[in-house]
Amino acid sequence: MSVEKILQDWKKGNFKAVYWLEGEEAYFIDVLMNYAEKYIISEAEQGFNLSVFYGKDADWAAVVNACRRYPMFAERQVVLLKEAQQMREIEKLESYIENPLSSTVFVVSHKEKKVDGRKGLGKKLKDSKLIEVYSTKKLYDNQLPEWASNMVKNKGLTINPKALHMLVDHIGNDLSRIENEIEKLTLNLAGKKSISEDDVENYIGVSKEFNVFELQAAIAQKDLAKSIRIIQYFESNPKAGPIQLILPSVYNFFSKLYILKGTEGVDDKSAATVLGVAPFFVKDYLSAARKYDFAGVEKVLLLLHQYNLRSVGVHNGGSSDAGLLKEMVVKIMN
Image (cartoon, rainbow, N blue to C red; front, top):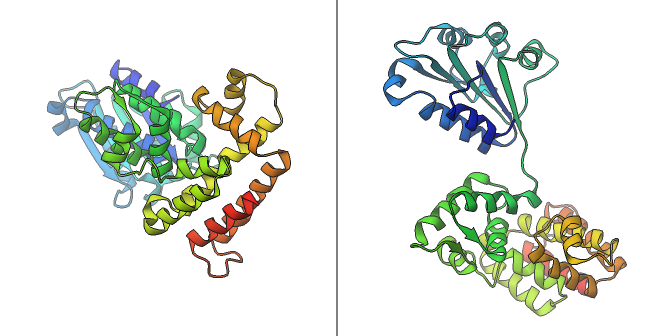
């Protein structure tokens, strides 16, 4: 079950008695909780038939009693339990979970972790057909461009590949912030239907010349001078390219290049499929493959691992982030 499928069911008026939303990615949980609070029942019905509890302050008995009430002048009521991971005695919800009312839609937000499936509550959640358990995971970094691109498409817009990677590389794995920035772009396009790198630069503040994507490209082309210029820009503008974003991005590129070196001879379309990238970017990998032999790619991956450790203080020697990056790119290209 996905967020889209749950929302689709709700819009059609198809409801389970309990929705247990759990896991690491708060964004997807918040989307569902926000919809449940505003739209499952009409605004006119919410005064009598919407109850909202917060885990830190909620008493389990009060939550269960609210769930067991019958709706007033309506077909159903909605009970929301937010931040349930902070709730004391959460296991005592088991009594209601075991026998929920069909006229109550009980939606629980349990962020950061899953409920223990070995205990009574966890077992009851798995056993009932009246309950939908939706478990979320953080998206991998290589899934972010496709996710962001789909969000843009849902707004009736397009975004060119370079602008997409500028946006994602700048923000990182923060889905709420990506959504907010896409919304900002949408409002500023003034009737345009396509987002360009100029738009990302003007409205989000990401330089189209000095960004993580451009540094990755410079390293891929063994362009030391350009790499140093970009790192110096990051040194003056630390928020533009934190090392915590740069190293994973470059590692992701070279790990794909490592795969490509093992499948040389494939055509562009097959290479895109193997690498899991848009066809537009295959030329970047093919070009880098001419600059680095197999041993060279292995060397880069080992250096990235070494400098990742140094970036968190392991054998750092007091170097700045910019100092580490300059030292690393020199070693990569020697």
